[in-house]
Length: 206
Image 1 (cartoon, one colour):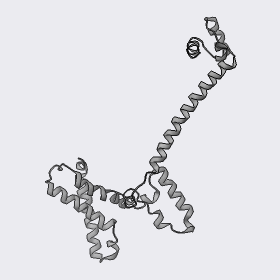
Image 2: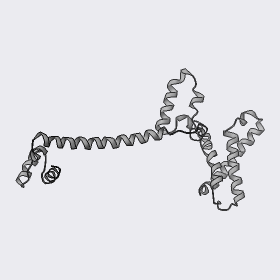
Image 3: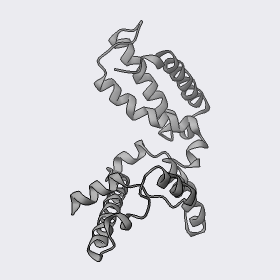
Image 4: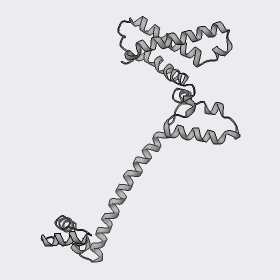
């Protein structure tokens, strides 16, 4: 039965358009429903219907499997200590308590949809610095090259200066707990770090 069905399906043409049907009939084609060609017995109809159901089930299974993979990706466990290295939102710090549930929900939705929320753009230099700090630390450990015009020592020294300057200003409370003179030094170091970073920018690969 299967071979007969396959052969007939290849040889026959089916269309619902009347004008097209007449045109095809005039050309010698047989036009009608699948059942017309394969017979209208319940057994034959059941074979066709089962095939259709099987194909739909197969397609649905593929889509479901794809969705499950996506959900698994979103639910991958992450070490709590590593979260600050990938999420720089300050929504939970700024909006605490029951009175801010609505805005917390909004920012949570943004993180799910975009991977970040609007609070990361409030102080985007801070966001970028915090993103770079752990990655530059790791870069020094795994890098196997030297930037043009630098020695291994000078290259690492500048990278460590960038890390320290960013950490002191952005990742600690030092700026708010020191004299105005020390505050000026912290700002000066960050500016120097940014200058180093701009000169080494195209060398940060291995």
